[in-house]
Length: 204
Image (cartoon, rainbow, N blue to C red; front, side, top):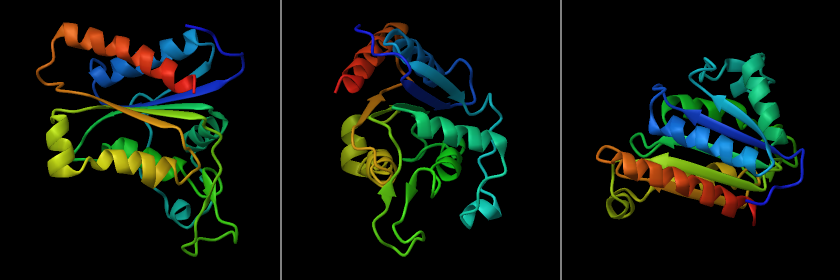
């Protein structure tokens, strides 16, 4: 792989309660791949960081957060040129911990803003400087069933409802499946794919 110029920040965020999960393996492989490409990689493991996913009353009303960890996550997101998200498919949505990270970290004034300084239903201005976002999901649903029966809501959530809203146009999403019946060889091959996906996304 060809290294990128120094001082480029990448943020990896993963949500899974099991240290031995494939989600954690993907996140760690992502960190290694980004470091090999020359990025400064910041690894945020929401469970191991003991992140509190609950919005506060003040945050709901647009006030600044008084939680140091949430503010740190906001600062890391604001400085990231590459964003990597890793989580499993939980009923067609991100798991609760990851959803709380989305709610608390993608805040008005930090990830997006409105021209009139208040949400009047108009189109927001994205504030993020992320050039490439990669979302890795794990699933036990086939691609055809996910698309035809459920409509692949995770694709819409990440690309359209959140990242595009905050100004991120270059979004790659990849789903590893079927996790429940996967072999060790499958997982090794999938981890190799992580390298190629990240190289391709950051080279655009």
